[in-house]
Every structure is written in C-alpha cells, then in structure tokens.
Length: 344
Image 1: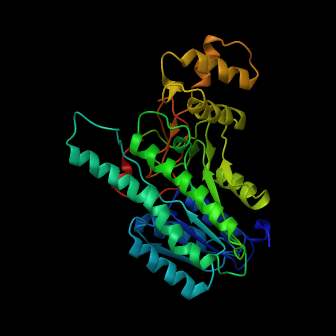
Image 2: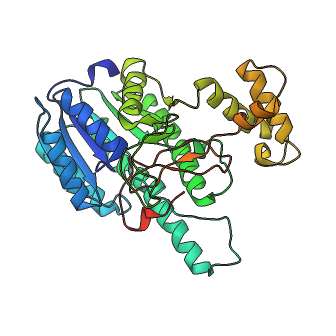
Image 3: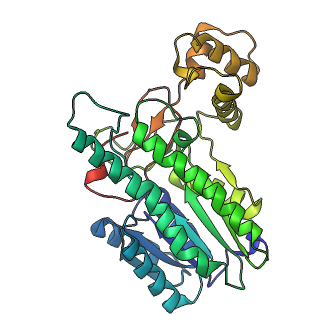
C-alpha cells in the first residue's frame, strides 16, 4: 500500500501540539477526509476549543482531545495505550509539539541554573518529545498490516542554524537527525509499512493575537497554516517525499535550497562556522544567493533581500518577525504552555 492510500475515511490520525496553528489545521484537514482524529496538547482550554472545531466538520469520524506532556514518557505511553485500545491502529502520527525560549550558547548575565533550565525545557519538549512519541508509537505501527506515516515537525533553524537561539537550533537539528535515522530504520524493516517524514514549515501566520501585539493581519509574505498543511499533505502522501521544506510567499524553494547549500559548504570549504553571518563572508553569501536566483551580480537592494528571512512565530500562537538572519519557521502548531510564550 502506498502513502497515497493512507488518508481515507475511518483512518486514524494522532497529532501532538494540536490545539492551534498547523496542528489544528492538520486535524481539520484529516477530519474533512472522514478520518478519526486524536488531538493532544498541554493547554486544555485551547485543546477543548480545537476539539469542538474538529467535531463540527461534516463527515468526520470520532474526535478526542487528550492533555499530554510529550516531554514525559509516561504521558506518551498512556496516550499510545489508549489509542491502540480504542482504535487498534494509527495511520498518521504527527509529532508536532514544541516550545521556545531565548537559549544562548552561554550567558554572562543570567545564572547558570536559569540558562540550564531553559535549555532543558526546550530539549525536553522539542527533541525528547519527538523521541518519546516516535519510540512509543513506532513499534506498534510497524506491526500494522495497513500503511502508516510518522510526520515530525522540524525547522529550517535546525538545518541552517541561524545565530540568536542556540538551544532551539540544537533541538531542531537533533530532530532532523533523529527523523532521518527513524526513516532509515523503518525503510530497512522489510515487514514495515510505516514511513517517516521531516516536515519543515516556512513562515506561517495563524491569525491569533499574541504577546507581541502584532495584530491579526496576515503579512503578505506568510502562508496560512492551512496552506502549509496542504503542501505537506501533497508532498508526503502525493509524492512520498521525506524532506518537506515548505516555501511561503517570501521564500521560494530555490532560495531555501541555496541557503541550505551554503550552510553545508561551510564544512566542505572549511569556512568559519555559520559563515553566512560572518562579516568577512556577507558579500560572498549575497553574491552566491543572487547567482542561484538568477540575478547575476549583486546589487545593494538584492543583497539585503538575499538575507531577509528569519521569520518566526511564538508558540502560543501568533506571528512574530525577527530579522536575525535566520530562516523562516512556525511555532504556531506547537504545544502550548505558559512557559513557551517567550518569543524566538
């Protein structure tokens, strides 16, 4: 059975970080396909609202909302056992929960314990949350006769690693590497009909109002959560892609690929770490980007445009743009928590 046959009436989807943003958009899409959907999140109030919205979709199967802390393996095991007791199988597992807080590589201003606490929280949710979810569900999903997919939400910051939020970048780089290993092990199991996919959103606007008071007007450069989920579904279930690197209205696939290529060539060419943001390499990076975009010689305005990404969204969920030379990412689908209201 191919991935294209996974989405169908009576199929089961389990989504972590489903109370808003991409998680909720995915739940609504699966509901419109007649699937049963299990939504999980930490924020019970938002989760209840999300469940009501999904239940309102005509033709949806069964809908459940369960409060889960994905950073706690005991919570995830209880979720898994409950899901398989009720449904017997899972067609789609979306490991989508995540949080963010400013996490520098080190700090001369904050006490070490405070810095460590932030790092531990980010890693516990973003990486160990994915690890817990996949390791709990995968052994059951590989035994299913029907095809299934594990979709892990990553970040462009886990690939190009822009400076400014070391802990978050580390967590998402670990997510990328783990999902690659997961995909390989699933592929190597001749009895498995389960696949894994790395879902990397671009700049996503959720239409909610957040702590930055930026309002609810969608920037022209952003995609909606619905657009992003539609793109993911086509790439995963239509084309079978592992790497789903989402564009948006500001960043094209060509620009994404050029930024990723430059980052990988830091190793090949023995450039300084994160040379894209190194003052001695800024002009070279701009020229490289313009050549990839087909603009030829660098102009002052094009040079600025080449590095104008770094669009991010806080996890509680609205958009917040911060030009730190990073790559677009969305937190709008991620697990809500009071702690995670800090902006990237």
